[in-house]
Length: 267
Image (cartoon, rainbow, N blue to C red; front, top):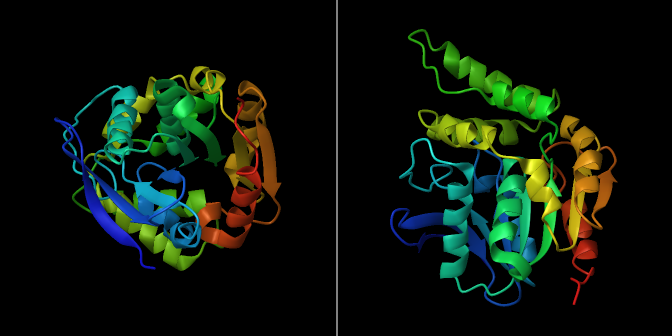
């Protein structure tokens, strides 16, 4: 089995969404990446899961390898266009795995798709309180290129801070390449997310939901509050694991995923 790539045709104005995928049978699983990164962050777990599922890492509009027809649009528009790609694949029901802002994309898709979403697994959920949300947006910032190239150093330092002092160099390099690939527009979606109420979206989730935290990920502190917003949600910590779990500890992620998928949606 090999990891494949394709552009999924979607309605105008998006026209296409880029995907990394594997698996020809079984339930659909869609991975929704952190912003401003892309679906490469999930490449280490797509193939193992594809033995039992049809697995797609979807690049949000303007991120990863998906083209951008957006400027400054509401966050909901990004989720709508990702759902267009899911619909184009004729996925009647599916599971969503989101990381950071990808958790919010999952929550908004669940609002729109309703009972079609059977499970949501949330990795590294961002802050849900107003102050934390504002600080998170400020940290992500926006594109400000400088003649002396210091903006490039700033991107590297942002990634280093997020992934920690003992980050996998390959993960650092990949995240940096994805970030710089969309640098001129990465803040468009961030500005849309700034106005989004993640807490309200989490309250609307009606399917089984797992907040899965890496023990050494600073974002793990946000998961307990987020889990309290979702009816019946679970929170699990993988002690000693580094961010982002699907990259840094695929076996732990896959084990947690398999356990979670045994939880059946309400009839």
